[in-house]
Image 1: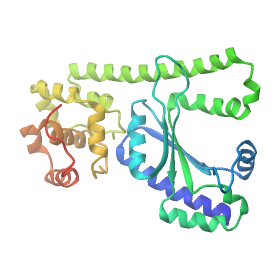
Image 2 (image 1 turned 60 degrees about the vertical axis):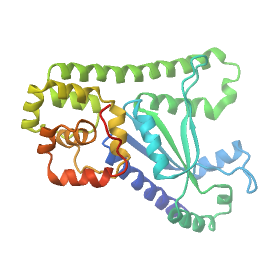
Image 3 (image 1 turned 180 degrees about the vertical axis):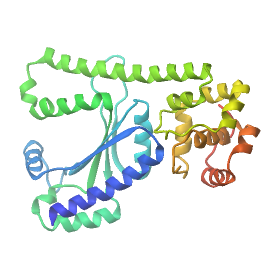
Image 4 (image 1 turned 120 degrees about the vertical axis):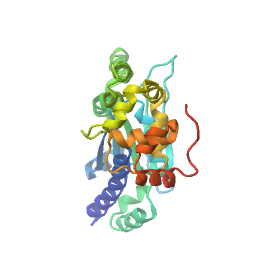
Amino acid sequence: MTEYGIELIEKRLKDKLTNELMRTGLLFRLFSRVKEQTSIEEKFTRKSYSKEGELMQDLIGFRITTYFADDLKIVVDLCERLFEKVELVYDEPNTEVFKPLRKNMICRFHRDENEYFIEVKKTNDRFELIDNTFEIQFRTTLSEGWHEVDHIMRYKCKPDWADLTNESRMLNGIYATLETNDQALKALFEDIAYHHYKSKRWEAMLRNKLRLRFLPKKLNDEISTYLNKNSEIGKNIFKIDRNTIINTYINSTLAFKEVTFDHWIFFINYCFLKDEFITSKTPSVLIDEFQFALNGTLEQGTP
């Protein structure tokens, strides 16, 4: 009963998180786990939990890995809106001191999940030391492996590293290399997007600028021809800040059934460009969706 109840809570939370992440179109992977009994007991021996004091908060854990570093903040903000945040640790880079950056969030169970959890706690006295919360960790795909190694080989056995200052710095140095590579990866695809913009390859420009999970569907031929003849419009699309575009979409109630170049060109035009020709080619059903989903949330004007 205990295991089933916890796994049911984990599944409900995972479904909610997956649906919202899929809506964004971002490139990501989602991992989840329920702590096994041996892991729970091991953590109880390392931590001083009590009914009157601190409780264990990560019986259920999720890890979201994004393909690109600049998507981390987008996903963190999304989770803050989706769940009741208890605590957020989001380290920013420090130019004076290097250390691995923590990006973790503790969230409270929703009322429905909490009702399940209350029933679970009745079946096991040890669950009195576990809080009605879950943890979400945020990583990039490049740093994911490093964090796994660090957690198992250093964090869980700190005495092994007590007098290994140089070795600890070397392990941190590997992380620093991965962090640099994350920035280089983002810059590379920005350069690729610029190259395709200059060459008037509009689909490739959009794919590499927005870095979403686009379906292999061509951009509307009339739109492509129009952009070829009016390169200033293409230039304006390229110049709009990528995260501004993504956040405008996520902060609305829009949920594209398909991530296509047409949908995103029409969306960008509606929000930022207001080009009459592209507007005339936008399906009326999309116009209605934009008006409904963005009503009261859209800042007018072109960046």
